[in-house]
Length: 220
Image 1 (spheres, one colour):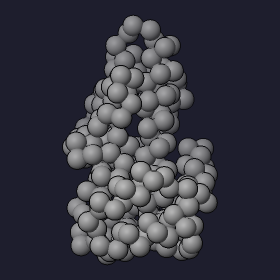
Image 2: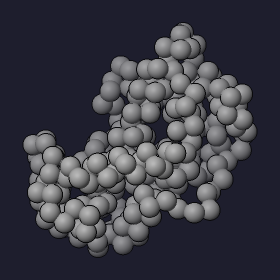
Image 3: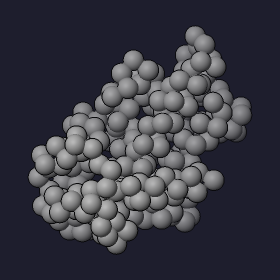
Image 4: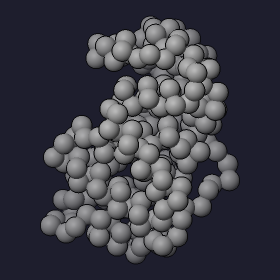
């Protein structure tokens, strides 16, 4: 179900590729990645949105980042917080994950056997950054942080990925809880943006990350 939801979000993003705001145009103009202006022009005009790999990649990043941001800020940061009252978010969320979802909190996340189309787009593009006219995946990530967050968001995204790849489920819950708490006082915080941009740092964990977030969101 989460993948079907995400597919529809991405489809909507592609269909509305011409809806970029003037703020997006300003940010894009500041980007140094070669060929980026051309991709954004196609994205804004709506031409060849599904055929242009650059437009497809950035639309996918935008859709995933938005979905993750909604789960962290709304489903957990607002709805779940109201449900638990004055309890510590990390403790309450860990309890729910263990008792209602049956998570073994001391275990790592198992890698799912088959990658979704969303994960495939992210992995394929970051493995071949020349698709975007960039020299390296590092340049693509920097561009993503500028577009959808900040340099500080990049630090949080890398921390989230270390948790996903090397940490336990308990550590991931704590990181998500921290980002959700911050989102209530600062919706544009680097930690919230970084949580959404983790998929450009470790795209191979996209499916596992989204599955975990959607499971947690279901408890809210």
